Image (cartoon, rainbow, N blue to C red; front, side, top):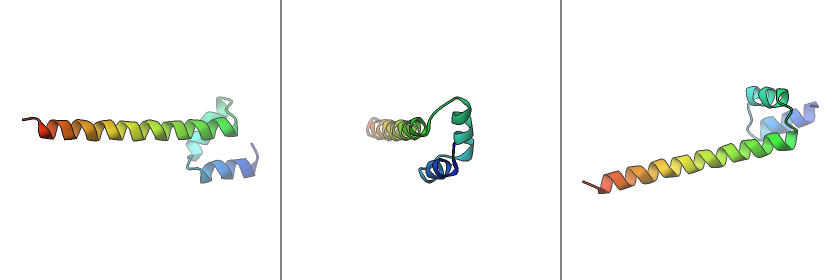
Length: 61
């Protein structure tokens, strides 16, 4: 992976550790970006579900 691609991944929010791990597994730059976006969507969904459960339990006696 060249320096430009590496810097681009860092700018997208991936950590050096994530980049190294995914590079060792043979991921391309595009695949790394897609997996990072997918993980962010999962985190958003988890936060929403947690918020929803809190709201439901607050309303129930």
